[in-house]
Every structure is written in C-alpha cells, then in structure tokens.
Amino acid sequence: MGFRLTPQENSFYDLFAKSASYLVSGSRELTTLLGVPHDEREAVATRMREIEHAADEATHAIIRKVNSSFITPFDREDIHGLASTLDDCMDMMDAAVDLIVLYRIGDLPSGVSDQVEVLSRMSELTADAMPRLRSMKDLSGYWIEINRLENQADQIYRRLLAGLFNGDFGADTLTIMKLKEVVEELEAAADAFEKVAHKVESIAVKES
Amino acid sequence: MGFRLTPQENSFYDLFAKSASYLVSGSRELTTLLGVPHDEREAVATRMREIEHAADEATHAIIRKVNSSFITPFDREDIHGLASTLDDCMDMMDAAVDLIVLYRIGDLPSGVSDQVEVLSRMSELTADAMPRLRSMKDLSGYWIEINRLENQADQIYRRLLAGLFNGDFGADTLTIMKLKEVVEELEAAADAFEKVAHKVESIAVKES
Amino acid sequence: MGFRLTPQENSFYDLFAKSASYLVSGSRELTTLLGVPHDEREAVATRMREIEHAADEATHAIIRKVNSSFITPFDREDIHGLASTLDDCMDMMDAAVDLIVLYRIGDLPSGVSDQVEVLSRMSELTADAMPRLRSMKDLSGYWIEINRLENQADQIYRRLLAGLFNGDFGADTLTIMKLKEVVEELEAAADAFEKVAHKVESIAVKES
Image (tube, rainbow over all chains, first blue to last red; front, top):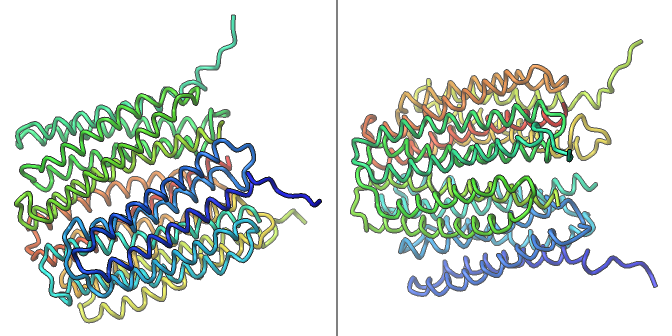
C-alpha cells in the first residue's frame, strides 16, 4: 500500500473549494436578481443571505481548523488571509443585493449586468482554481485571467458612473446616489476577487 | 528571588494598552459631540484632535521601540501592523468629528448615535484585551464579540444610508451627501476595529 | 579585483527605481492636465495611459524576476508587496486623469492643484528613495516626509470637500458628485504613497 496524506491535511483544500463554491451560488443569485420583477427581489435577497451565512460557516471552519491543526499545507497566516479574502467577495456581492432591495431601486442600468457577468466569471474561475492549490500547479492562468477581468470590471465601472453622472440613464440625483452605491459595491467585489488571486499568487511564489 | 522578564520586554504590552486607552477617550468625545449644542462642537473637536495627537505619539513610541529592541515579544511586523491598525481606529473617529464641524452639519440622524455606541463598546473591548496579549490567553471572546459588533455596525450603517436616501430624515441632497461622508467614516472606524481584532487573532494563531 | 554582487541580484533595485520613475512621469502629466485647455485634456490622458502601461510592465518584470530568482535581496513577499503598492499609486493617478476626461469636468477647484502638488512631491521622494533600498540606509527621512505629506494631503482633501459641499465653488449637485470622485481618487493616491513608505519602513525594520 502506498503512502497517503492524512485526510486532515487534505481537507484544507476541500474547505477552500467549498468556500469558493458559495461564490458561484452567490453570483448566480445576483444574476437572477437582475432578471426577476421588482417585487420578487426580496425573495432573492433572502436566498442570498442564506448563502452568505453558509459561506461564513465555511470561513469559520477553516479558521478553526488552522487553530487546531499541528501541520498545515501552507503558512497559517496565508490560510487565514485567503479564507477571509474569499469571505470578502461573498460579503460584497451580498451587500450589493441587499442595497438594491433596501434602497428600493427600480430599473438598473445595463452596465450593472455587465458588472455581474464579470463577477460570475470570476466566481467560476476562483472555484475552479481552489482544488489546484493542492499541487500549486497550473495556477498562473487563473490569476492572469482574474487580473484581465478586473481591468475589464474597472472599465465597465468607470464608464457606468460616467454615464450616470452625464445623464445617460436619465435618473434624478438621489437615484444616481443610490445606483452609485450599488455599482461601487459590485466594483469592490471585483477588487476582492483580484485580492484572492494575488493571495494565491503570493502563496504559490512562497511555496515554490 | 524568582526570574522576572526585563521591563523592556514588558513594556510593549503597556504601550499597546496605552494606545488603546486613547480609543476609549476618543469614543467618549464622539459621544459627547452628539449631546452638546452645535456651537460647542468645535471645542469637542479640539479635544479630539489633542487625543489623536497623543495617540499618534503612542504609535510612534511603539515603532521606535521595535526598531531599537533586540528581542520583541512577537514578530516585528505584527507589532508594526497592530500599532498602525490601532492608529487607524483613532484617525477615523477623529475624521468623523472633524467632518461634522467642517461641513457645518446641523442635527444628526439617530442612527449616528447607534454607530457611536457600537464604537464605544469596541473601544472598551479593545482596551480591555490589550493587556491579555502578554499571556495570549482569553482573547477569543474579544475577537468574537468584535466581529459580532462589526456585523451590527454594518446593519446600522446600511439602514441609516437607506433611510437617508429614501427621505426618512427629510434632508436636501447636499445635506444627504455630507451626512453620508460622516456615517461612512464611522463605518470605516468600525471596520478598523475589526481589523485590529483580526490582527490580534492572527498573532495569537502564530504564537500558539 | 574586489568582490562584486552579481547583476541579477542588483537589478531588483534597478527595477524598483524604474517603477518609481514612472510615478514621477505620471505626476507630471497630472500637473500638465491642470494647465491645458479642456479640449487638450484627452491628449494628456492618452499619454498618461501609456505611462500607466509602461509602469504595469515594470511591475510584471519584478514579479517575473521574483518567481525565477533563486536568491532575492529581501523577502519575496515584500518584493511582491512593494511592487504592487507602487503600481497602485500609478493606477490611482491614472484613474483621476481618466475621470476628469470621462465626466467631462470643466474648471477644477484650486484645491485640486494643491493635491497634485503633494503627489508630485511624493513621487519624487519615492523615486529618490528606491536606490537606497540597496544599502537600507538613510531611508527614515523619506518615510517621515511622506507621512508628513500624507497628513497635508488629508487636510487639503477634507477642506476641499467641505468647500465643495458648502458651496464655495458654486457647482451644482451633479458636478459636486463628479468632483468628489476626482478628489477622492487623488486622496487615495496619496494614501497609496504612504503605504509604499510603510512597506519600505517595515522591510527596513525586518532587514535591520
């Protein structure tokens, strides 16, 4: 019988994969929110909240595991940092959904769909990359693509704000202020995904 | 005669305790500001500025001590990081006070008092936890409670902004913009307290 | 013949110096932008974009070098962190230029020139300090001065926003919102320069 790593050691990767899988579910709810009638948004927000809670649990499971493990696959601090940055992505997507409902926003400019599309792609790439932490191989494609998508998100965000401010969407000042909060939260989510990629890159650099 | 750690080694803890004690003083001035007539706010801001300067001095004392000590109780970088994150809490509470005076804001919505109450509690918990860095024991209660308070602060903040935007406070657009700056600065202070707690948690994880 | 460090080892310092030199070029374009007629701003923005791309290339050259070097002059993570924080300074100055053009902003309040003057000084100090990373000597003057400038930037920023909100500039609400975005981006650039200085300070602390 060959040598096998203990299940304990392996499961950090499983926990990261689980944590990132919630990002995929969360970004799907975000996409759903944009398509449903306004009076069904609250129901989407409730499901989003549940996903956010489950993601929170996954983050805490990682932290607890770090604190109780004698050996960890990479630096304790890095595990800590990666877990909490993944959590930030979720928190910000959840916040965007929450704000759309709380601010009783009506129609959303089409640029918001573009932002959400980028976040969906980022979620999938991130969930897809997590299992590769085990071998630390084939990760550079992931972080290069995330960086590219973050630049794209940045362009969408700036043009969207410029459009709002220059009256393209025909909204009154208070509505512009509300929409600005939402598009900023979505942009912050894209930034958080980039931070996850930077974290993964710096772990890979250290461990290589 | 028993063995005793040298005073030099001990005093890092004293310096952190001192630094955090300014946060308690600062949060008290914040609370005072909300209760005094508008024309007495400038006097509160002056006292706040003095506390902020004293806190700055405490931060620099820690940095100087790190640079000149041969042995430090935990990683130099972590001492550095903790000191500057504590300083951020102070800076942000000071900034909020400054903005209220600078923007010549009149009445404040009641949600601002709720934000300040959470910051007061966070200040006390943080000041209370610093001496326990020495033993690295009984700290988990502190960071769990700070996390809980930060979630509460987040809820207050979002509902407060939603209320402002939806006209609950009956303010004009420019006043809403000014109030938004103040509540955002207070929310940033709550985030900074959470970062202090994360820092303490990650130091405890490393040193355990 | 005396002992000489290999060119490979040396060139990290050269790369950091190069990266920081783009900040000087970028801050010069920012200054130019404030002086040209509005219809020449787009041309400045185009040159700024080119500088930003060149700076990006310099950042990636550092990252590639870290990944392929067996020996590095200081911690891989710190090299990584310093490179990406330098990049943030550039990105934020570029974003400010971009926003001024995108939002079709007319005249800018004089406080914006004060912000840009501080950024120019910060760029020069930073470019000037990079070669001293080699000896890790005479760096404290640099970070002390950057901290002082950042405090000054903070004062300018707050007074500028207060002036905008209190009607000193006589702008309508939407114009105030646009100008706010620009002054915030410039303030974020000043913060990023301070983060570079903190990074240099913490590297110096570790290596000493």
